[in-house]
Image (tube, rainbow, N blue to C red; front, top):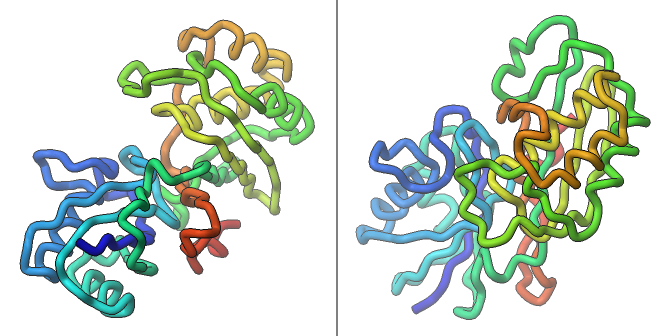
Length: 261
């Protein structure tokens, strides 16, 4: 059967993460419901990276197999007609049956957008994280360097994490500031459950001068979740999508990527 790959964006504020649950209040549940109505048949999907409750995505990639023949344009418009307004298919491609949205990914990318302000977010509520105190970039950048390369990230791993190994390879961790907004860009071969939010909590403490940059190395070496800071809010976390070999001819980002500060 043909295999269809979809690129989706969504605001995760109203959903209990990606993965299907009995409540039906997940992104996967909404997508499969829309596909079932459009195809008039049950459809089972897989995704490139499962997101938690409240986490957003700019290019979640999912795939499914179907005997139906539709144009790429029809898959996008037809599926979107049955999706809630905070979830949208951005593109659709028929791919080789050997393609697997998760296993074919070479790396995965996330951004965390943080508002530094004495006043909590209002218009941006749910779409940005928040830090009350002033932060310095230099110590956070120094701390980020300790996380690069292949590392045991047990100290940043949630107790519910189902990954077979805590060892992951952090390819990049870049920090930028634009006015009152900070943006933290992460890229790794894979991530553990809550890994980015737990790293963010430590980076913020270092940026605010509560801990030295070298503390990040100590937390990493401890390989113990209790050594790190409490898990940070999901509000400003965005899944930017996976990277695939160019041979799959899939988009590398969606137009909504430019929204981020």
